[in-house]
Amino acid sequence: MSRKIALLAATTAAALALVGCSQQAQDDDGMDGMDHGSGSSSESSNADFNDADAMFASMMIPHHEQAVEMSEMLLAKDDVPADVADLAQRIMDAQAPEIDTMNTWLDEWGVDASEHEGMDHGDDGMMSDDEMAELEDATGPDASRIYLEQMIEHHEGAITMAEDEVADGQNPDAVDLAQTIVDTQQAEIEEMQQLLTAL
Image (cartoon, rainbow, N blue to C red):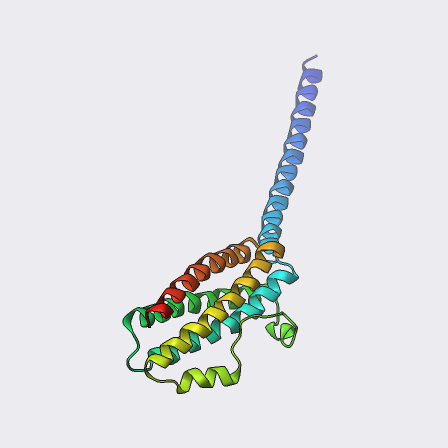
C-alpha cells in the first residue's frame, strides 16, 4: 500500500510540475505579446497621419518660413514703430519653433515635402518675389504699412490651410497645431488692422 501511495504522490508531483511549466510558458508568451503590442502601438502613433496631414505640414513650413523672412526684413529697418516691431518679433518667435515641429513630423512620417511642390492649393497668401522685393526696398512708415498689409493677406492664407487640416487631418498633434494657427493668426489679423489705422 505504501508503495502505491508513494507512486501516486510522485505522479501527482510530476503533473503539478508540468502544469506549472505550462502556465509559466503561457505567462511568458503573454508578456512577449504585450511587449510587441506596445511597440506596435508606438509605431502606429508616429505613423498616425493621412494625406491632409502631410500636405498641411509640407505647405505650412515654407509659408511660415516666408513669414519669418518678412519679419526679419522689417526688424532690420529703422523707424519701425515699437508696436509693429513687437508684433513682428512675436510672429517670428511663434512660427520658427512650429517649423521645427513640422519638419520633425515629416521625418517621422517618412514624407518628402517636395512631393507637394507645385500643387494647386488655392490662395495660400504667399508673397510673390516682387512683393517681397517691395517690402525689402521700403523705408520708414511705408515699410510698416507694406508689412502689415502683406502679413494680413499671408495670415488669411495660413488660416485657410489650417482650417482644411482641422476638417480633414488625422494626426491629433497636427490638427491641434492647425487650430492654434487659426486662433492665433485670426487674433493677429485683428491686431494688424488696428495697427494700420494708427500709422
